[in-house]
Length: 204
Image (cartoon, rainbow, N blue to C red; front, side, top):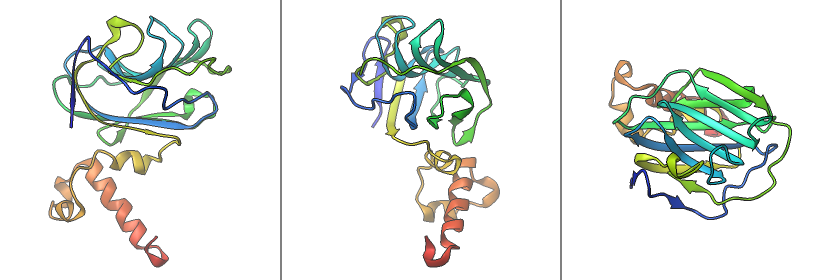
């Protein structure tokens, strides 16, 4: 079920999803953005350039911030290509816990995205545990406008195959009925993963 956000409302999930700079993690959600800027999910101070981490839209591009001190301690990168507004997209961010921007991957609708590194100095841990919020980030002006659904948080970096299959809504029989040339990238990735699993000894 999707939650609607009007640029003021947000969901406070409490002190969960606390990750520090050596912790691998993944964030995923379905989003329907009506504006080009706003926070998708975050665990960050509710001020501009606040300490913490978050997944955002900036000029319709997916943006990741991990901030200890904005000027010199943290990591920031964004997707090269902007999202189309006023339609559903599935977004995934993964981080491998190695303190480098090269360990961050972004996926949109099951496909890995080229990224641009804006800052890469993740050398210090966060000092505090902050509430995990959906639709809110760095200050009141950073609220999301649109809808968010299917928020997932993992305490590991998903593999490209796993990230690619998260957007799949159809069951296996439903996908099997779709001609291969008409399957989406996510559906094709899911089918390929199933075939590899079934070909292993014991089917695992």
